[in-house]
Length: 274
Length: 319
Image 1 (cartoon, rainbow over the protein chains, first blue to last red):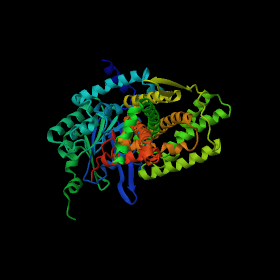
Image 2 (image 1 turned 60 degrees about the vertical axis):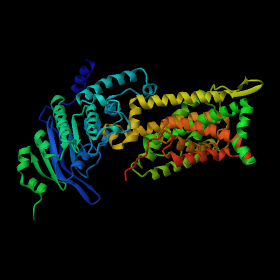
Image 3 (image 1 turned 45 degrees about the vertical axis):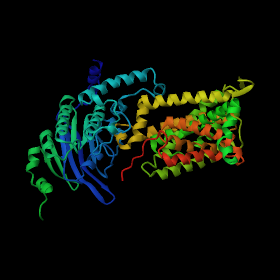
Image 4 (image 1 turned 30 degrees about the vertical axis):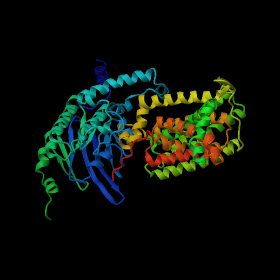
């Protein structure tokens, strides 16, 4: 019961945005490593409440784009505006604090820790009791720990991973690890969730489960989602709008239907004789 | 035949003949082991969170002890000096994070190791510059630590003598280890520390600030160093020679594993007790003085059979 109330409170302070408003805007962003251009002059936006897919052949700059959005990379040119605030350089933990969570292409979990601890680590930014109480593990710090544990249990129920609560995640099969990683990102209660190939290496059934979770997160929690995915069937099914990259440039942007019929996109995927 | 007898049988005969003396040796070994464990703990803390082997841990022990005694010599009351020293270790942690760790982030481990060697020489120079190079007396009594000793009678006429400061050292070390264990396993910051140790990128993505975590571990290592400095200092002197003793932590770490707190404790005890027993019962066979290298030998033999240490994480590398 408590957990429910807290859930509502935590979301109340969030943003002044209505569904459909621009949440994140990428303007003329370019990123290069030495002489290699990973991203050239890309602009697109993500609207509140939508599922936005970023697709493209290997090496198109999709993951670099996510890394720019959550502060791992600093673009040489361009501006990123998140919830009305423009920024050029931002550290990853600042991005996290402003409401951006993400998962990684090659699962990046804390392998020695249990599922529970992994997801609890997502609550880091929402726990505030000071160092002193933490060291003593007493009083306020302990109550806070219990409070957040409730929220984490909610996420564990949501993702149907109750049975692996105490298992060290290094021992879990890949599909479940991906799910735990999603859980950790959800524990941050982000406004914007970035998913880097959430379905890579999964079988059909696992993909269906994951699609369902993504749709549920989007509709039930109201989380805006940007995802990179190679499975076109999935992308076309679950995303509202799609942006297509190739060789670091944007070659298509629009509804799944538009993108599917875009000649540039077809050429990029199928190859074209010059 | 004689030689074999003196190696394989005679030492044990001696142990049985003088059980009180054996107990005394075991106790001495235990106390030394506890102190080794404390030093090793400082290394483990930093290694766990940042993968850096902190060569400067030994000099931090000396530096903390010197600061404490030096402040007291300048007329600061003992307890205030203790609090101020904790503050100084905090400042040191912040400075190390800002001027050593942060500029070197993402560099290979060897570079970070070199930087801690640099830090060692800086602290030696800085410490000598401010407090002078002479050995100093630890302010044991002023800090309210017990002195003196108690003798227990064992069996018929045997004696076991316990130095009170040794008992205090053991108790304090145990409390410290307990608190660290809870801190690491049950709290947000502890979880963040383990997270950073596991995966930097993932830790950043959930909003953990590496800079903050590093400052915290260096501070924790500083507190451990201060405790060690007080305890070692009370048994001998506070001098730069302590830095060499700190290198005894190396065999302890090899034995216990670089990432394990329980390993540091068990490793410390094995080394402490092992080298005392070795020195007393086997030492005379080769003319004594084996205490200084026996620990490294034990560690070397261990390396052959269990390179990850007793409790270390399994090293599995993909090739």
